[in-house]
Length: 70
Image (cartoon, rainbow, N blue to C red; front, side, top):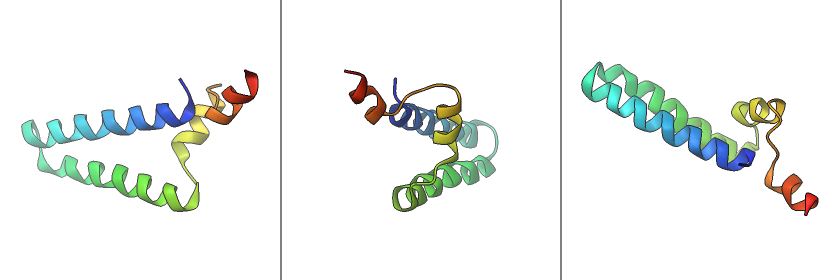
């Protein structure tokens, strides 16, 4: 799995979990869902993504790094 796919998977997981939590626990969980969406939106323009930095430190490679290996 690459950094890009890991970010997509993590965002999808967070959105799904927080929507379920907002339905069954407390509607304030939707603030976290909004934060995930805003972070994805800003990272598409700026290229800055804290999750990507964490995944890279964990040793997950980007798609470009995987392509250079082959």
